[in-house]
Image 1 (cartoon, rainbow, N blue to C red):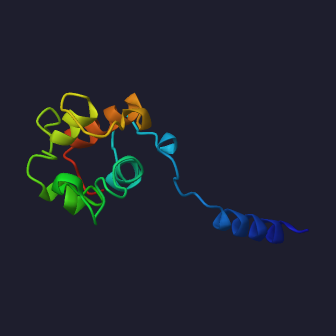
Image 2 (cartoon, rainbow, N blue to C red):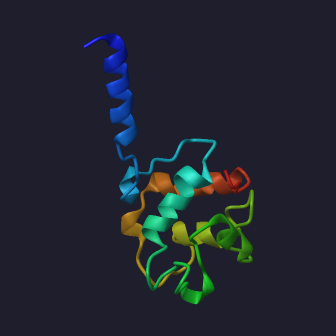
Image 3 (cartoon, rainbow, N blue to C red):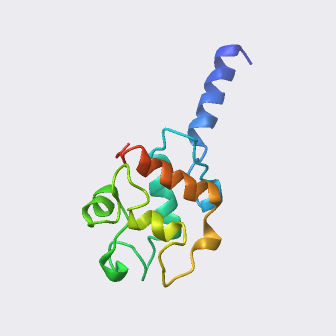
Length: 125
């Protein structure tokens, strides 16, 4: 097999691999430059946005966490640059009560990562 054929096969194999995130454990937050699309959204989708909780159809207590607009349009849920004042951070950090126990699904790194995202301005990045 020549080099060109080998590279082509390698490219095809890498294009077919499934890099989808299927469990919260797969989400590792960086120390800075936290991405909503790569980190925050997948975490919320896997831990909060499912049927009878905070999905787009049932949205418990009117809180839908399925997208950036839904998160930022709910007053007080996310306050850019102010995680101590943001309800989402207060809940994740155990400072506010929550009916469903989700803490077993998230790590300290993920809680810190969401805090960092809010500190960085809660961007839709």
